[in-house]
Image (cartoon, rainbow, N blue to C red; front, top):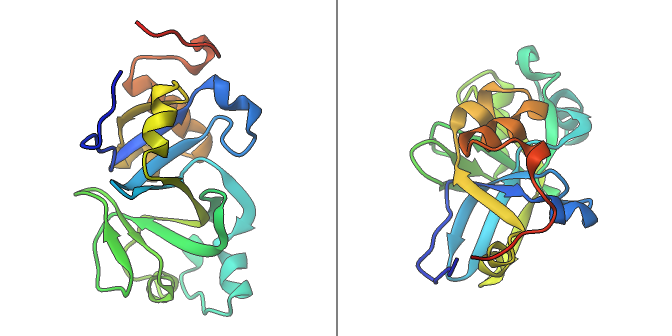
Length: 190
């Protein structure tokens, strides 16, 4: 497969192939690509919860949490870049300071004001809060795709926001009609 500079995977899932098992950061990773352009790509891993809840995070960063319904939700490992920085993946666009609209189904906000809103129980109701992100330099993602390191499929908000994290990878694979257990760690080229 030849990938050109016009290939854009914004709004797609990246599914780590078994060949990525040598890199524990991306073993069995499901990443939502939030931005992909000539400068590179940025994505958030959506299936790797940390041993930290939103209640614990709000306490750590000294924010009030009035919405106890979300206190037990996990915080996710979004990727290995800027792991000290938070990112909120959500559906509805809003008036927050740093929001990127991914497509009609996803937005990504990196400003603290969205956490204040969520903590008060105001929309957006469906959120995934992550620490860090996955990033690729210009041409790097295309190179990795050409080496069969990732599969791609359009991202589904139902998979991200309605399924438990442990079921998301299998559900994304199901969209391709593939069972992860049947994948080989070697790939050929036609």
